Image 1 (spheres, rainbow, N blue to C red):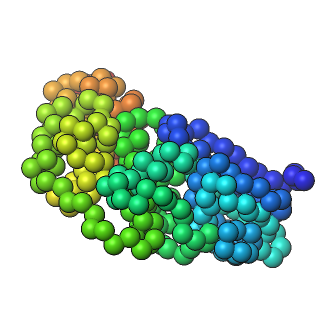
Image 2 (cartoon, rainbow, N blue to C red):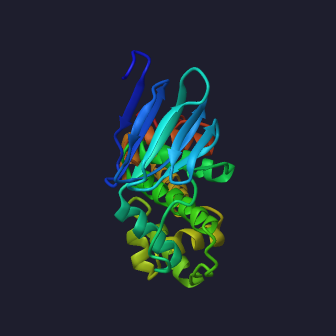
Length: 277
């Protein structure tokens, strides 16, 4: 029975196949199953649950994993509430993701343990959760795809797969960079760039990081900030420069510009001799 202290919230996401939830509760949940994959993290407190592996315990920092149809329950470990976050994935989305990573090998996929302690995977989950619930824009969607691919790669490797992950052509990755450089203000998706390069999303994401040190979405953001700077120097107002450079709105430009240059777009424009916007 829910109490006044229960807090369970589903967040809007810009990925149709993914639900995001945050919860803080001392409630015990009866046995049930989901029709989605669930990947989450315990942020505070502890949690005890039934799983296909028997009864397991999870504490702050642990990841909790559940397969579609897996019967489980949940109650606090000790006294008091626990806080956790979950991402729920439609099975077809996870199946497509793992097929991308393994290049079609091992079509059947199951999360290999109900609870794991893996700081790197925790960081990837945090990134994916943040990108999934961020304001909708092409770079947030691309960043989510990248974090999800990295997380799936770590899970697939943890399952014991030994098939070498397919390499990608440096020339194909270079072509993608040239496409971005030619018009960084246009809307991109990782899937569209991969198709244009003749690569899988995984090959492009990993190959781009290996070749240029950053994932595609970060490179595009860097290019958009550079384009906005040139437009500001030419006298455009920040709001105009933001839209022309591909930002969702001026606030997105403000944050990215300040991170890179330490000043707002407006202050930069004034320093170039332009009047107030």
